[in-house]
Length: 141
Image (tube, rainbow, N blue to C red):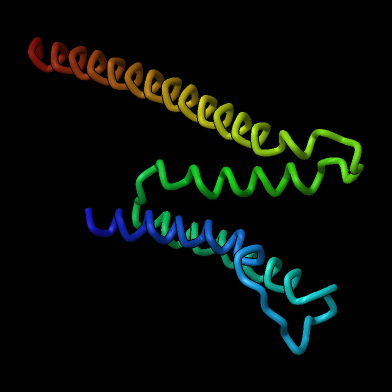
């Protein structure tokens, strides 16, 4: 149980990494060819966060912990592809779009889980029936 809690905390830390460039202001002496230090920090944290999520996943975190990084990654996608036109009202609703996308994503995951559970139950039934048929063959021999 303790490892699941620690893994869930690592997932949440990876989520904070995704928005770290908005939380702190840093100035590096070398931006490695990027526009500014915030962009460098964003690129580095975007590279580290998925690795941290993969590491934490090995310790079976609570599934609910994944909602935060999914929401933040979805929010970044909406932000990247949203209109930069100041007259556009889409940016005002970006958080709502993102929340709706995450809810849709979770519904899809739930439906897939139900489908695969049903398939596994069917396989178990078939294997039980096969075992029963094998038992009946052994009794008559």
